[in-house]
Amino acid sequence: MLYYEKTISVTEDDLDELEHVNNVRYVQWIQDISKEHWRDTVPEELQNVIWVVLSHHISYKGSARLGDVIHLRTFISETRGATSIRKVEMRNQKTRELLVTAKTNWCLLNPATFRPMRISDEISAIFKKNRGS
Image 1: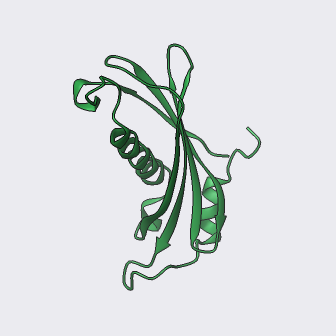
Image 2: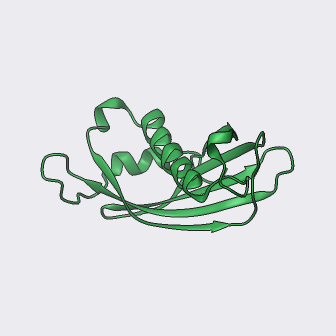
């Protein structure tokens, strides 16, 4: 699998009334890392498509607080037809505690018709690099 990773430092704007990272913020981070992975990995000439979320399945395993550094890691686990399953894990970088796991079903749309379109072999091959690592 081709993994994409980044870190985020928790700020006051990320917190809810319990002083933990707000669940909505985790969803935003899931979307952000997914888009960054796509944008930073796929050649520009293949980026003229639209991805939309069909579903998110998120499990909250722990909580993060102000000042924590969170390590995010994502990869594509499966593609079929017009859909792609992306997984995201978030861990406390210092303690390695698993905070969040997410599985998102994305659908590829034709930008002219906004109808689903099959994921090309060329795009699929990009995300299968480094299989087994």
